[in-house]
Image (cartoon, rainbow, N blue to C red; front, top):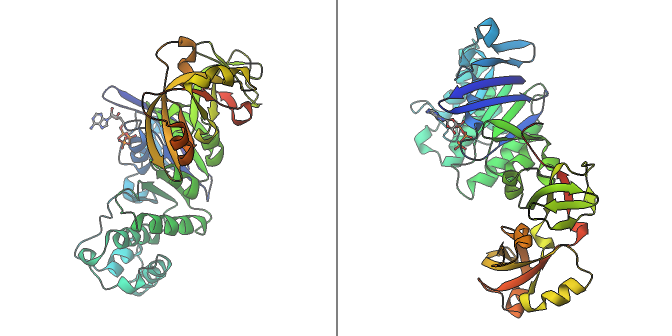
Length: 373
Ligand SMILES: Nc1ncnc2c1ncn2[C@@H]1O[C@H](COP(=O)(O)OP(=O)(O)OP(=O)(O)O)[C@@H](O)[C@H]1O
């Protein structure tokens, strides 16, 4: 699938160029209002872009310049959203058989296809049920079976797990992963999600939209491990400090220099970001600042503890800039994961002055997104 989309909605403009190879799954991440649904709707044919084209394999689905716009139901594109939207008066089996029937299959052939998909999605024993008799997770699995039984060349998944509860969500993620991976090698998928776990487990590549532009793209693991925007860093659970690249590190906007073990080929002077995990931020009580700086620690800064919250086996500290010392502004907004015992031992609490240190080995410096790439 290849889509080049240019569309304006009020003051908002989306310009995106995305490609998914056969068999591939692309995750679309981005903050609220960044254009994820608009992109999906243009690809589904539900919205007419002002410029661009959409193709699936050899077929042109949209070509604005040539006036081509294949309607949604003839695109060979399946859509699954948050709500299953099953036909309420039809049984599960008739819902799943709907696509094959609509494409001209006889009753018996359509039932056979439906049965195969119901079995693959573990809903075969519900074949005679009506939608109102299903749990949310079962209904969503039936909706996925109905979508796939229609043999789409592209399946668009718009937050398919968002409405499911804590039990049904993981089960549905596992089912989705299985059918997306072991399915038709010609079929590709596009998944709109807010959850980086969905992107990691279900997609092989990702784009991040911000303000209607693609600001990051690449293999999911690589993008989440080396984010170039604060949005991606946040969802990947990493700290990100902006500045300009210097030899072996980053000069922050407030003039501090962070040394880094990895500088992914960034030109000195180029806009760059330093990225490191919260688990690598060490926190010392403020009165030890002199000792910390005199020791082997580089990348240190004075800070204030803003908040503490439990985070699995550790306590996650949110760090604020100190009340004085503008050169330490880079510490503002950092998170640090500290063992619960250490929090008790150091008596850490909100408002306390501390010193933070980040080892150079934990820091990677990457080119920043500037809007020109
Ligand atoms: N009905 C509308 N009329 C005019 N502009 C709209 C309308 N709906 C959305 N927009 C604009 O389009 C932009 C993109 O919306 P879209 O729904 O594609 O974002 P999204 O990334 O899917 O958001 P979310 O994560 O909240 O679902 C919005 O920021 C808004 O400015």
